[in-house]
Length: 110
Image (cartoon, rainbow, N blue to C red):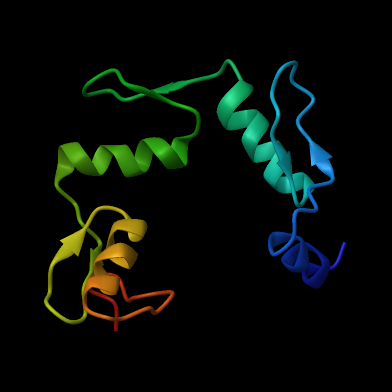
């Protein structure tokens, strides 16, 4: 399937990939999004944090969570130097500066 078709679906209500889980009303623009939803919402497998025992649906979510314990904030504001543990938090912060950029360099990158 072309990326253009998938992209266009994001701007319409077309969501041909319906969640097969009973009672779940979710639908998605592509099969990958459906697979991610099924794994993160409906899968029984959980990955525990070794520090606080919270559990997560994926290792990538656990890695982000671990930053709470480690204090690592790899996403730095180019305007004021404030850093964040999550990229979405930096994106929100950049809007406070009137900056709507999609990406920002990580700490230590050039």
